Image: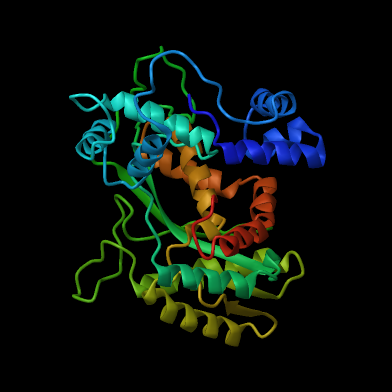
Length: 369
């Protein structure tokens, strides 16, 4: 609908004088080759890039008002085109006795956004969590400090709840339905779950360690009030480290001739003391190896840890099996985790440099991972 501004048209013609390549210019300005060719041809034949006089109805919104409408929609102060239309009418920026239609405002705003190479669209899902400036600073500091690290001798660990959401139904990533009809599945209202810890290395995965919070599991650990714990405690986490994560990690690394390796965990305050004690005890008992803790893991950083991609893969694969019972689902999760493709682990570890580089480029902001 909207033409490019005269400044943008002149920039296209100037670029063409330098490179003589329409495809290259179209790619740079995110325009079609047809649009680029039109303005270059106009400049070469007429000598200017001004709009030709046209007959027909005057646009409902002029260029300046369309830009304002686009800015208003992006400001998140207005939830609909109709609200923007009313505000433009209140400011006497549109003609007529009544506000223009909301759909008209949206059409003009989207066309203006396309002309400026910043396409906009409405998003209806929940917004992503915004990081604080302090959190971004921590992420940036971590990435700068570790951008040259060799991640081959690092084990990433985490806890994950796998939910048994669709008993007896195969839920795959893609489903075909008749257009206009929804994708339906019976979902458990009180889903059972398996709560576990595991660690990944480039060379394999540890055994899963089932912990409190798992359905139908009677735990031996108590919370600070002396009541049977419904979730992981510091004492149980220390057991997870001593019985599973550290010995399994050492076995995986020793199989590759690595005796000094690094243990990564999230920044849960209750984990720090347990990990320090467990690692100290391990190193004292095993003089031939040394395990150190990866320092200063930043909060709110699942995008920097490749184990998060593993969790998504395992949950998806388990749901696609259509397990009929919780026990079958639990066994399936363990089996999938045990048999992770080696290529997947290689790719995840190879992605670490790109993860950190993107976070640095975004000054500690969220990455695509």
